[in-house]
Image 1 (cartoon, rainbow, N blue to C red):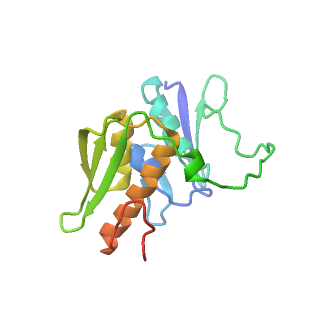
Image 2: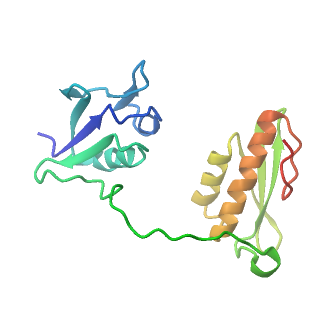
Image 3: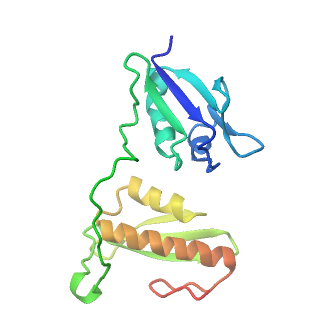
Length: 193
């Protein structure tokens, strides 16, 4: 018997589909855009469950944690406790922070270098060039979406600064929007929509 159980509360489901993207072999959305466990059994009018073993535990927990409406849980059958280690309903002190940034005082170059970003709408791709700290071209990255490019850059360890990563994500998203909407893109300039 599997050691863990995936529980789905279809009443909470908003149809975001992140679970389906992560584990299409386990989850699907029905005609109402509500989550369904493909091999699951009904455990109530709006609930389903599915036993999973240790081999599927990490991916099951990940799929549950990305659910924005907390419609999925993974339970240890021995203890009856959730494996998610989250407490969304528990209140904690909330800090109020006024945003601000002075690029002349705060900007620091990433020790790993910098990037140039250029969309090519006719080809449906964005090309990014990475230059190391000595301003030498060290990598060329090509992709169709901002998400696949910035994740590739992080996975290949081409960036080390959090502010640089945030900046790059913003620039890539602007480039993707410009490419899809046939807008003029200039790196470091506001996108004119």
